[in-house]
Image 1 (spheres, rainbow, N blue to C red):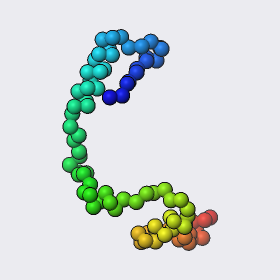
Image 2: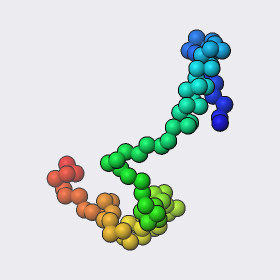
Image 3: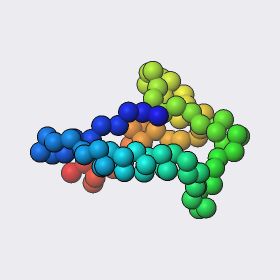
Amino acid sequence: MAIVTHIRRGGEELTPEEKAARNARLEAAAKRPYVYDPDCPLLTEKQLAEFRPANFSSMEERAQAMEAAGIADPEAIPVPEAVNK
């Protein structure tokens, strides 16, 4: 477990009773199971494998990934003249 330190805004530390209460809350929270939103279930192994990094080492790599995914590059789409005015 990580060491957690709290100092109040006035610079004073928590009392021993407050520290004990804080530690009890942290220990209780650590024992609770994870509860996932039913509207957003856990991803399957296949779904997790389909994730790709969003940070590319070059613009060429970005363009290749977007082309492979069938995504149009918004920078390559011509903007109508009325929008530029």
